Length: 300
Length: 293
Image 1 (spheres, rainbow over the protein chains, first blue to last red):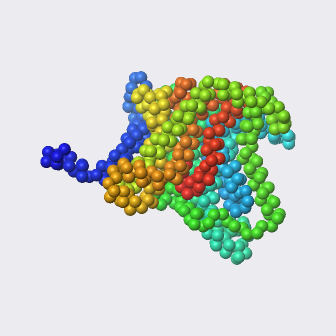
Image 2 (cartoon, rainbow over the protein chains, first blue to last red):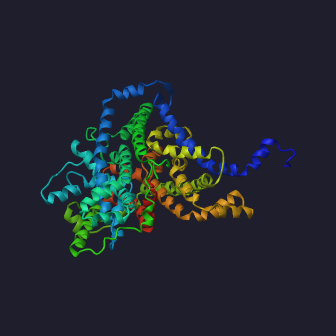
Image 3 (cartoon, rainbow over the protein chains, first blue to last red):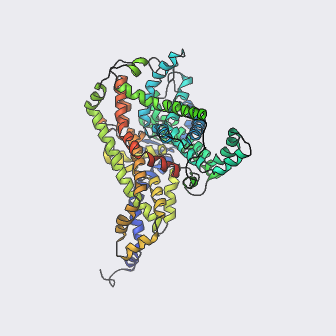
């Protein structure tokens, strides 16, 4: 096409080569992202103000879903379950990860093999882990009660007693996930200059004093990052509940995401389930913002 | 990289690795190795038990027999491999994971290159949108996404399963950060030689990003291979289910523990192979970027 017959806007477009290439390169991912990530998130918010039927359409009902949630004992129960689970699993995971990071932060023969073994459960699926641990936790012929039986303990109803089910799930998820937090904390430990702990040792501090006064304060941002990641993860507990307990016994492990799944895909209360999603988002958002305000650097 | 800001641990590399504790006394060394080994035994126990159980004949259930009996069988593995559903689920998971890896790598590096090296209107605002969405848990948008896919006739199809998962914000972020470190001179030189925009990307940028492609590829594979909630709701027909969903279904039918452990072991095999081959990669990239599913 000759430039004489070319309209002005088209010439501008042709000459804007860098712009054009930029847009062309981000276009595929941007379209998919807007369609399958951004729009469903907005739609999720809208849906929480609707009564939606797959065949039958949409009725706007204002805050009715949220009012119903407020009066729904099952919802408060699932919130309690989720927060209790977080309260058990987050400290357990964090303390275990710190201990393991300290243990493997050494240059000795074979350490990379130990590290690999500790990390291995992290790459598994929660479904597979739940399958194995369902057997481990079984009351009558489970592996754990078998082991404990040899020293005269039990049998303990790990998954079938209201009091034990959340700690049992938490222990399993710590086993599965601790390798990740351990690696993050290990990177944090290595970022602390050796000279600091050496200086404190020269000043006559014991190992424990050095840990509490030097290492831990310097590790605080990384530690907080781990706590936040673990907290957000624990808010979303679902796979293990689905495979191992189905929310039971008597809703003692009926978590928020499990209720969201139940309400939407079992009872087709899509609007009501979306309202649960909004609650989950607000919980996650608060935790993220606290971390951002305390330690954020503006990136990511 | 995840929803929350990863604190700076970048000095880790410069600081020359683990603490050298100097010469250690013999007692200290023995204690240390005892602790390390005891912990390794605890961490490895569920895997070991799974494997042993998978190779024991049905009915073996006493601790002694599981760990020390000499009876050994391939029946559990064999019956799982003869199960057509199992083969189908394995195939579905492979398609889900492998196609996603290819698409995520291509789309993310293309966009990451543009965000890192191109100037265009609203570039930083669009990039910010990708990052901002990381704080929205996937569970929040999963119901509208499901409704959308059903309306598009994508339920129980491969594209309905895969396409919604390939616009990966973490991938775009990771690629952008890496490509920002590539000198502009290389790109300019190629352009002076008359290379087209896409050719610069294909022949200059892609080869230089192979290390980060490998890292991202491994993680995307694991995320998809292990994914559960999305495949569970979008592929409800047995023939379209993935291995995680199939395993959960099998478990609900209460088969023999031996057969179940064999199925679990089969589902873990691909991840294990990747881990053994790429262990160093995986561990390093977590330490330096905090990448997480």
